[in-house]
Amino acid sequence: MARRELTLAGLRALEGQEIGTTGWHLLDQDTIAAFAATTGDTERIHLDAAAARAQGLGGIIAHGLLTLSLGPMFHQELLAVTDHSRVLNYGFEKVRFLEPVPVDSSIRMRLRLERVRPIEGGSAFHLDQAFELRYPDGTVAERPACVAGGVVAYFD
Image (tube, rainbow, N blue to C red; front, side, top):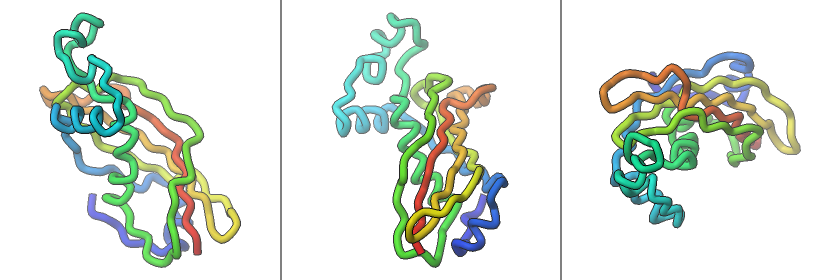
């Protein structure tokens, strides 16, 4: 999907609607290892295939928080809001990791603007983020890898 340029009024008008779906983003071993090094989360299931298999996984899996951290990148892939003074990640209302993400799988995000509410100096945009999973063999998982109720604040 092409990136949409919107004003805040245009974004508010999308309340209750799906905004779109991003392209696929590969989570290879280099990306997983870099995330582990950056965060200090060196749990073996993310770095050692034999250890991951010993724990009942098919092999190395990506960190759940790596999947979730792709949200801002995906948001920017879908939207450019043109008339705000500042934008902040306001937080999350609910996050669930539903499926493990095997190394060399791909993730994309389906984004829906659930609701908009006023805050001092701007608006809080409540976004339903579904991180869809495509396995290395090309099949798409029935359930998302992660679902998150994100909140982004745009200030006028």
